[in-house]
Image 1 (spheres, rainbow, N blue to C red):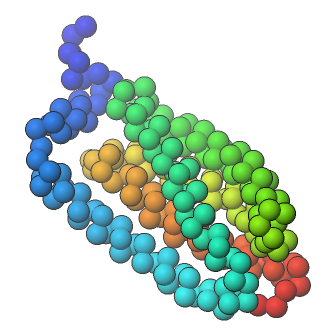
Image 2: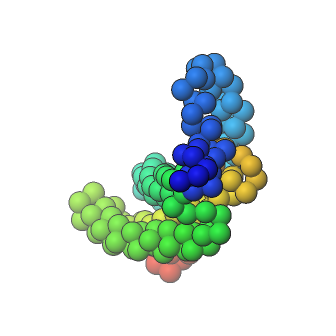
Image 3: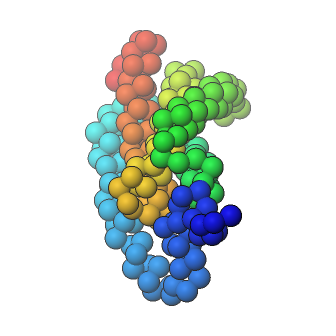
Length: 204
């Protein structure tokens, strides 16, 4: 067919970037990426601010702290799956910018479903298997669907945002997703915790 392989799916610029990659040195790759990583590192500092802001909650319910790495890891994993899927589909020309809303909706709904299943599993396991209190186990179970939805939503939308802004989604989308998910996920976790502890009549 006319147009050649470099224009497959209408993403010729992306394909040229991929072809250029083979010729790039480690230094040029590092130079291109380090600035963005510095920006996202700065945004991750908000996690420390959030932890500090909810220090009183943590001191009263120390078991909450056990699940902070789990939340961050799960958010990153869920968002990473969405980023990888959307990037692959974009670079192969399977989806284009016109499909953005359909893809984002599909991924967000999928994230919610996965979060409900995993939340329903992790709550009872943490209570009966680890001896975690029922209020904290409830917080974890309730947070999972929301965290998974946010991660899938960000993970699927950021590649499209990068393409629309003319930025390289392969370099920016994944670390941006991880940074945003860590911050929003942690904030949701502690806000949900405060509400659920009140329902259980616990002092904070």
